[in-house]
Amino acid sequence: MWEDAGYQGDEWVHWKPGSVGAKYNIDGWDGDNEISSLYNHSGYAIRVYANDDYTGESHCFPAGDDLGTLKDIGFNDDAESLKTVSRC
Image (cartoon, rainbow, N blue to C red; front, side, top):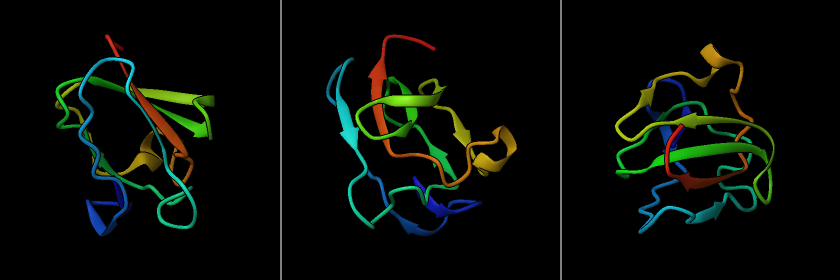
């Protein structure tokens, strides 16, 4: 997950989950509410949440999915937590 659209800027999240149900909170200043693009190369579907602790509005990205700008789905700079799910 990158700070800017088009996979530019700082790469705030470089997470390699090991199974379905794995969880990740984007903590502190580094990336919290700053994600603008993502590429899901984890091998799992990932649900991204607008709030800490996997709550609030969410969007699911299947394995291999990429989105050069989260603005296209109205989720720009909203990501705060994510977890792997069995499917979208």
